[in-house]
Image (cartoon, rainbow, N blue to C red):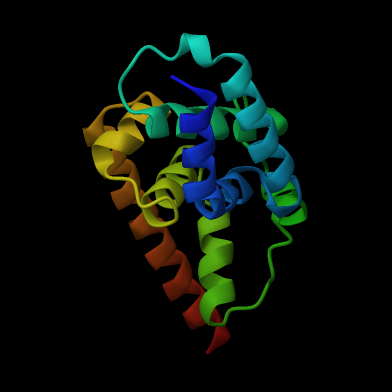
Length: 159
């Protein structure tokens, strides 16, 4: 694997890498996370042993985002999430959906961002997160259900 191949993936998917990093660790940290991820990829490129280069790079970005706030070992509290993501307390449209997604448990949030912002299929998401495709499907289903319930509840409270 060459640094040119890593650079090509970086250039092609930079916007998606930034969106996912922001979704996992917060908007303010996203650029630093993606930068650190690609420095790591270039430094440790020898550890890539085949398979999908893109999936390998996604795994580095997700792990770097998790590590940036110590999310590997613990979940974030609601207060931490609200501070980190500047979650608006409005119950209208996009802001309500954004807030509902950001309040999801870490794995569900990662799956949502990898599916809808990185446009990865279930197999690729499974490879990135080191889980099975069935777990991806279950996590995505649970995330959809949680978001739906949150939005219904907020709509009821607003009326």
